[in-house]
Length: 123
Image 1 (cartoon, rainbow, N blue to C red):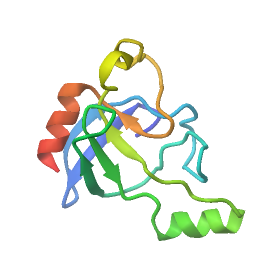
Image 2 (image 1 turned 90 degrees about the vertical axis):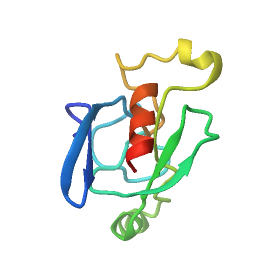
Image 3 (image 1 turned 135 degrees about the vertical axis):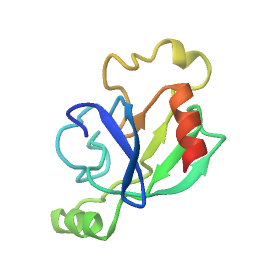
Image 4 (image 1 turned 180 degrees about the horizontal axis):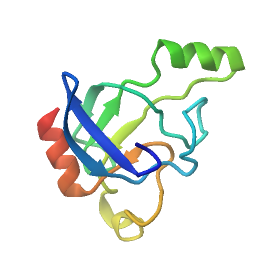
């Protein structure tokens, strides 16, 4: 729910919980291409976990899907990828990150440290 800056976590179609999020630098509309700063819209799965991320834990989103690839191909652009739900940056950058007051990622979905730990345990 990009407009509300909310992420819904579902399991087998059932809403488990919602989280407040910060998004990419251009969050309106669905992601179309690499570097557009837009998080994808729709239903995606978590397909990988990274405990050694430069952000406090990260969960990779299954973007791009078949339709996303086809749309980008029709535009003649790469679809992008490497979209994650992640916590705040590790190290000193956490002190300069404007979370949650404004969008700051390059196209990912960011939550707090506590929220990413909870998400990590639920997926």
